[in-house]
Amino acid sequence: MAFTLEPGEKAPDFSLCATDGDTYSLADFADAGVLVLFFTCNHCPYVIGSDEVTRQTVLKFAPQGVSFVGINSNSPNTYEEDSYENMMLRMKEQKFPWLYLHDATQDVARAYGALRTPHFFIFDKDRKLVYTGRGVDYPRDTSQMIVNDLEVALEEHLAGRKITTPVTNPIGCNVKWDGKDAHWMPAEACDLI
Image 1 (cartoon, rainbow, N blue to C red):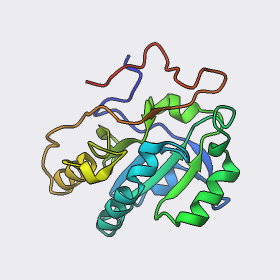
Image 2 (image 1 turned 180 degrees about the vertical axis):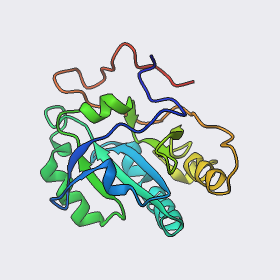
Image 3 (image 1 turned 90 degrees about the horizontal axis):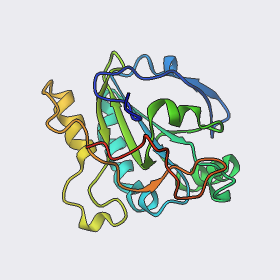
């Protein structure tokens, strides 16, 4: 079995606290025609470098019935900047147009097979995975961006077409696993393609 969810697999359920103080599960997004879950954090330069492109993607696709949910699974014991308190501060400062959930146990990151920040997962109305991987090809410096894989996948899916490239390798910092070196990844976690 692959570490990361593969196209066609169902979204694992979760119950996570958001920066708004409420707790959310998969059922809370039942009305969304498409659900984009992405693993992100506060400190990663690849996240910070591409947050504004992600914001524009959300603003473009949310009116088309796409819901976006960011999940921070990084251990604050590795980077204090990734604590829940700092998540709340970052949302207050940046006013991102997505929910920002805290995966304190890292169980959700393990269930989805999150490799890096950012790492995107697109699910259809039945919550089957249709795309996983990077958002853009140059997340650290989007001025060099050539392709926005997330937007391409969303456009193809919403048009009822088969997604041309359903799997790409996420580009970013690895998830910061609690009790492990900052650069550690599970042995079974490797490149997706």
